Amino acid sequence: MERSELLREYLELYGFKSLTEVQKKVLNSSKEKRNIVVQSVTGTGKTHAFLFPIFLSIDKKVKDLQVVISSPTRELSRQIFDMAKKLAEKEDIDIRLYVGGDSIDKAKAKLEKSNPQIAIGTPGRLKQLSLDLNLLNIYKANTFIIDEADMTLDQGFIPILDEILSTVKEDTRIEVYSATIPVAIEPFLKKYLKNPLFIEINKKDLTPLNISHYFIKSKYRDKVALLKELMNSINPYLSIIYCNKKETVLNLYNSFKDDKRVTYLFGDMEPSKRKKTMKDIRDLRYTYIISTDLTSRGLDIEGISHIINYELPKDTEFYVHRTGRTGRMFSDGISISFYDLDDDSYLDKLESKGLKTEYVEIRDDQIVESKVRNARSRKDFYKSKINIEAEKELRHKRTISKKVKPNYKKNFNKKVQEEKKKIIERNIINQKKKK
Image (cartoon, rainbow, N blue to C red):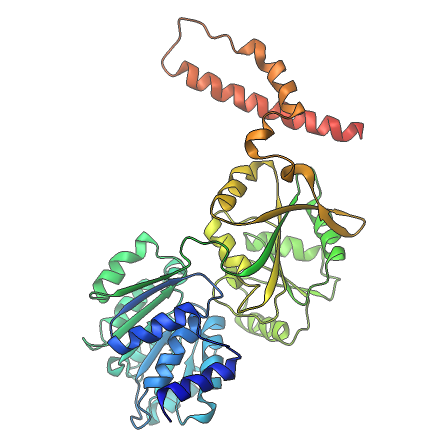
């Protein structure tokens, strides 16, 4: 079968109407056989971008290792393996998965007889089978793919990949895929990727997906109660509720442990528990998943209609990763985030990057437009009645002595602004009490 016909079959198999931008560019680069670094936001089809060229070019006659795909978590590795197996259903291609938690003895027994043509796994297990046990022939691979490189860096796997890549052939094609390219990973890239082709997709655009972004003010509210109100106001197919720490995940889950619709997920859960939870999620036994950022990077859980940021991530990049779990591949999605007064500059940053934000509140189990932030811009905020009252209260402090110490004015103004903030918050509370 010709390459174009085979590609058409692959697209139909996954329901793609056409190639996405990243898939087109990677497919074109595969003809040049250059090393590549692909920076692309989540939900743009990165996994298929490297799987399609692999299956179009693999030599089915060579019964030995040709392609290695490294991924930082068991779930991501298993996800890639499942996608690859789907492509290989009509092909005579040996694909094997190597991750921690799976039987090492079974993997060893099979490798002693033969190597797969495609090996997919986590860095630790790939190293164990190739370098420690000398069974997996990574040194023979023609292509080595590093998926979610920034997450690989975050989890401390770069030194392990360094050891593995030191054994590959000089002409092995290395492909790196990542949502961001941290400075800390650049020495590694320079060491192993000579003259790479850089492919950047939607680097500056925070809204490449079909997602509506709603924000609910949580200041002076019981956030757990607010979350319960929100859950009564929406009807998701599947929703992820994001927290920044596993402690918050567990504390929040304790408030919902009697609700059979709710489960939780974080990185260092016991492996068998994590595996079972993922299976139950995919079997749609739950409607809400309270999670850390484990689920925000690359992990493809189908059918996520709503993202809820119980806590906003510290970095706007991670806001993109999280919300990118919904609105994937031609589907619509909804993101709802809680925010308070301290997040004003964070929201401004999102909006300055092109994110269309809508500010809402919950009334009678309905999500309605809020006038809190929509009614005025950040600049106009300082003209509001509360701020005018605060300015009057602070006016007597504006006189500065002619004889001052260095930086006195700067420090004085800083203190005034802090005092002003306190007065504003106090006035807001007083207004609420009057109502």
